[in-house]
Image (cartoon, rainbow, N blue to C red; front, top):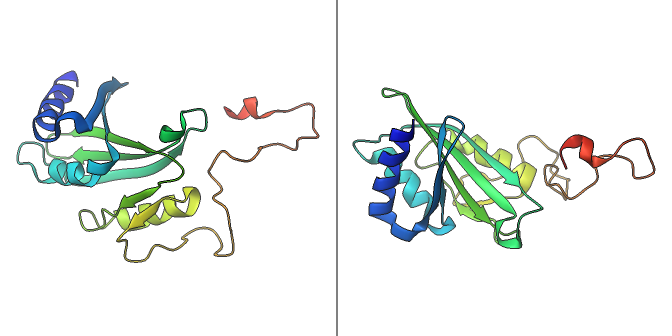
Length: 168
């Protein structure tokens, strides 16, 4: 798998230079951290580059890291798959709460439609250019985003439990 890391890393460095902020092996996945401004362009490159051909968007999910510095509080993670070669990679990009706009990738992968709606619904990411960016699982009346780690998980009056039991 580290061979795949080197192949993709060299192609991304060649094409996008300093916009590739980091690369690492995380368990069995090569992970590439990008500058937010080039994320869509990189995803398009990974899909269309003739040697790489990551044609399948396996998943896209939002992440909230309240313990991170303000400019890296939120992240989007894209998992791509080249099925003929059985290559899988992760792309991550970080952003502050004040700027959660991302270009839609529904024009690259139709499956991104519902994935983007879900991350809008649960985290508040705004996918610019999305054809129907509305809530998909929660009620329209909700004025908050339930997967943000902004609220205590337990009743604050209870002494027998705390958020540490839930990974916070």
